[in-house]
Structure formats: structure tokens, C-alpha cells
Length: 89
Image 1 (cartoon, rainbow, N blue to C red):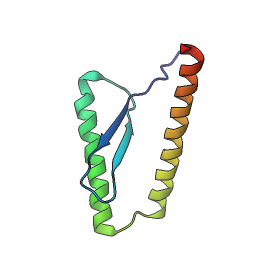
Image 2 (tube, rainbow, N blue to C red):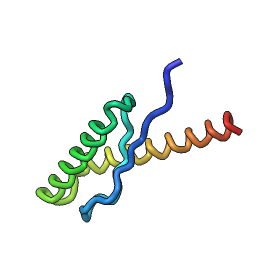
Image 3 (cartoon, rainbow, N blue to C red):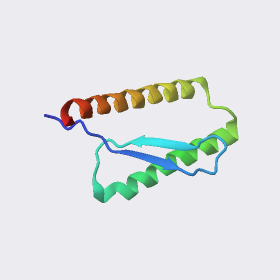
Image 4 (spheres, rainbow, N blue to C red):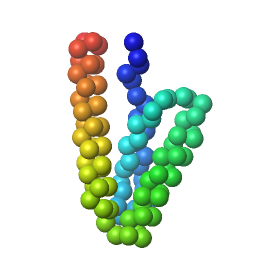
């Protein structure tokens, strides 16, 4: 059976007026590459902040993707909690 567990990285303490926290879900978790994955996530967030500062508010497409990502993260968290309650209780 394919592994269903994902590694989630939460980045905090941005000096941005736009981003207070970033939640990154890794494709494949490898402890040896964890620092590289975090560096990539920080780069993605930094580029996003730079783009916002340069162009103003994000485009509607970016907002839509962001909304879908938030919904997806919530669904993953709910599924994880349900799994934990069902199988770990």
C-alpha cells in the first residue's frame, strides 16, 4: 500500500506585512534533504513576497490557487484527525 503520510513544514516569523506563516507539504520526505526542502520553501515564499511588493496584490489566479490550497490543507488535517481517532483510540 502506498504511504499516505506527508511531512508538513510550517514556516513562521516572516518580516512581511503579507505573510505571517507558510505551510509547506513535502512531496517525498527524506530526512537528509530536510534543510534543502526548507530552504526551497523559504525561497518560494520570498519570491512571492517580492512579487507582491513589486506588483501589488496577487492576481485572481493566485488567490484562487491559494484558496484551493487552504481548503486542501484543511481536508488533509481533518482526514488525519479522523484516522488518528479511528485507528489510534
